[in-house]
Amino acid sequence: MDNENLNKEFKVLNLTIEKFSLTYGFFLILWGVVISFISGSSSATSYIPSFLGLPLIIFSYLTIKFPSKKKLFMHIVVIFGLVIFLGGLDVIRSLIGGYAFENFWADISKTMMLLTGLYFLVQCVRSFVFARKNRE
Picture 1 (cartoon, rainbow, N blue to C red):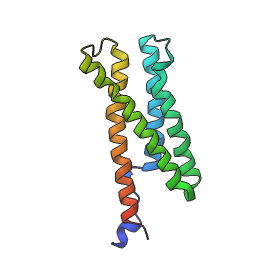
Picture 2: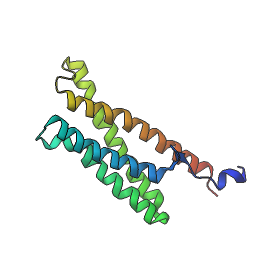
Picture 3: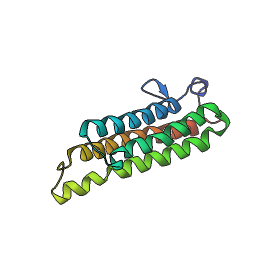
C-alpha cells in the first residue's frame, strides 16, 4: 500500500461516493416527479423512483453528517441501490411478454432504474473495494 492512496478518497464523476449517492437520490426524485408530470399519470407507481431516491438522500446525508457511521449508512445506501436495480429488472418481463413500451413512460422509468441502478451498484462496490484496500 502506498501512502498516496491513503490520503485519497474514492470518487465518481469527481464526487465522493457519499455526494454521488446524494446526487443520485435527487436525480431519482426529480425523475419521478418530471415523468409523472410529462405522462400525466395519476398513479402513485410513477413516483417509485422518487420513493426510492428519498432514502438514498437521507442515508447519504447521514453518512456526510456522521462520518463515524459511514460504513453502516453506506451499506444501507447500497441496499436501496440494489432495490432500484432489481425494480428496473421488471422491464425484462414486458420485453419477454411482447408488450414492451406499451406503457412507454413506465418502461422508460424501469429501464432508467435498471441502467442507473447497475451503474450505482458497481460504483458502490468499487468504493468498498477501495476502502478495504486502503484501510489502515
